[in-house]
Length: 592
Image (cartoon, rainbow, N blue to C red):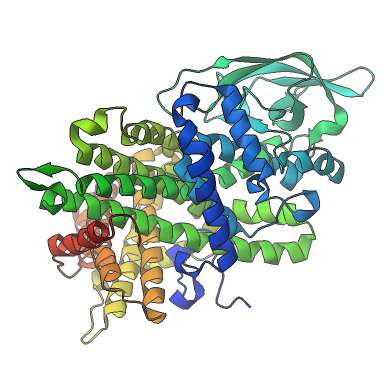
């Protein structure tokens, strides 16, 4: 039985939950851990031995590996049992996404198939479509892809030119157009294609089989990374798509596309965790083997800093990933009672957490980019050589900041979506923000004598949230409806929101770890360093925003409040990072 309040998307800005009510990775049950092991075993036996061959854009080999994963049941994790899957919880789906994230190009092909290639039909398809397609996609008999992007329509997806026209006999839609950057294009059997019917303003979605006459697959693109995944253009030349293959309702395609992007973003947040753990393992193993000046480089403070910072950023992001995953599960259960369809309930729940999905996408992809970059640096010259895997990790990581909507788009979504939800009355953001802004002189840092370790940390997090509210109120007052065009200010607010959500998730996780009687001194170190750094980020981001929307005495008054609210107790971050690094070095792999 679930307990505790379920926060709405973005509501963390004005509300909080208790540690006992959050899910943490240390709570995975035996069945979930077995699934995780199955994923790791598959990578070890089927993926890693074939990496070099797959990197040469061997479409047929990647297709065979994907089909093997389907035969073993790995493609059916998210699919309901009645369609040949396992119907696992969203938390379990995210765990599988994490573990397969260490699979380089395979991970991209696998996630594209299991996620955006299959789930649109699970979530929006009718019973006939689910029986015809999902049952085959769940086993790997069919492989799927998702066709949204066009040469002139990337971030602005609804501006696509691909068109559909009903045939004279009313039995088919005649599809014409072009899609690009389509993952799995080279071997997909089913394509989720977005097009406008007649002169519709918005998109519709179709299930198209690649064997239909008029479907032409281009050659694979030559890419910086993820070279083993098939990425190509697809052309549709008078393709006859049966009317029964319209996915959802006419004109519902844009909603489907946005919803599936939310799902892709949140799962990417888990996917990068697996890749990051792999890179940290590569980093520490090399540091424990490589000698310079007669000693192992893992003994150097500069290297320990890098290793510790890799751990801190990963552990904090991981805390946020599984926190929101349980929120999604709880909301699915709630919505399922109302609508009776688990598919629709699932996508509605995922779409609801749009703010958190964008946070995980941006923060996760940038966390991974930091980790792989430092992995190359720790390896020195060998990191730049293709002889070792960190070079591949570095190249493969870069796409994550572009996938599922660029980080620029998603950064804007974080603050804009939260404010829009608040305007609809889902939670009281503006009332609290106005109260703070109108009484800036009375703001203090709230320090009290004798507060405990966790009371102090929670005070910091609450204070950081107050800074965000003050900046939102000041920006809204200054720019009104034009705020959305002040992208630098929106980004300042989003950067604070992302950092605070992740820090709060980390605080909740460490609090729960202590409650279940683990030795958590090193986890307190992780929290201490993260909070210390978050205070700096919040102070700097707020400063940039404040001087953008006000000046003179008002700016001085606002910044005085910001300074008070970002005061944190000094921490010996050097020693804290060394203790974190020493634990990693001793274990010789990531075991946090």
